[in-house]
Length: 250
Image (cartoon, rainbow, N blue to C red; front, side, top):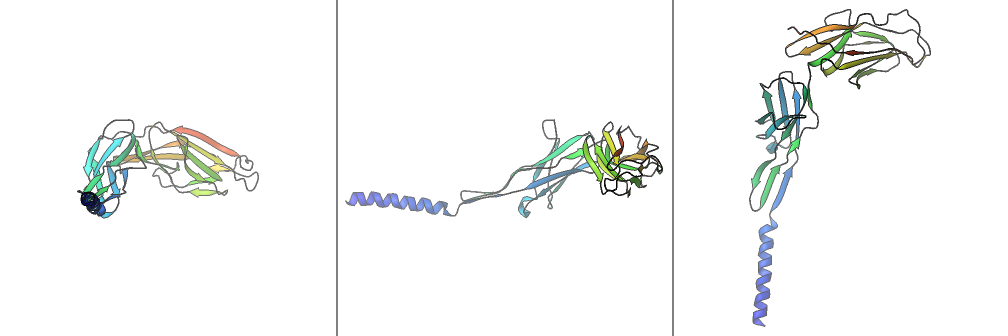
């Protein structure tokens, strides 16, 4: 009996010690997010997380359709990193933040989880593309439309004014666009009041980059006021233009 009691006591003691050695152990994995943007000459990446997980993070830049990282850097105390000196190439770019282990031993594992940017940085021939009234060459003139207007870039809606009233639209920024991309401009009469007068001013497009800007006229005439009325909700203007190569000057 004494032998059996000794064996049972030894096994129980071993189990107790094992439980004690792991009772304080824990794993902490902190979520992170990473973003990337293009400023016309460099890519800026940023890591968002709790304070220990934003600094000294390894961040890499990638281009869609290509293998391997284009550049890798380390975030500063504010979670920021920049990639400059890269050849400017049209494409969609994303960033990845590698995981970082903060503490690791027999009882603790504290780490920052890896992350990938949700939104790509888009590099195009024009960092900003703007539509404006062609009667003014500086890109600041409003586009008067009677009544509603939509703009699509490569089939994706980039602008809409659909309030049913004649509007003087401030210069319309379409974002990054490449030479040769389709810009479709659609204008229609209001659907609120039945047949009525319609018009749209001549339209120019401006291309802006870090290296300069330039503009050309897409439509030098538009639809002047005083023409035939259009039916309620009727499309009276539907034109698609390929963005031409625009010489840029500083």
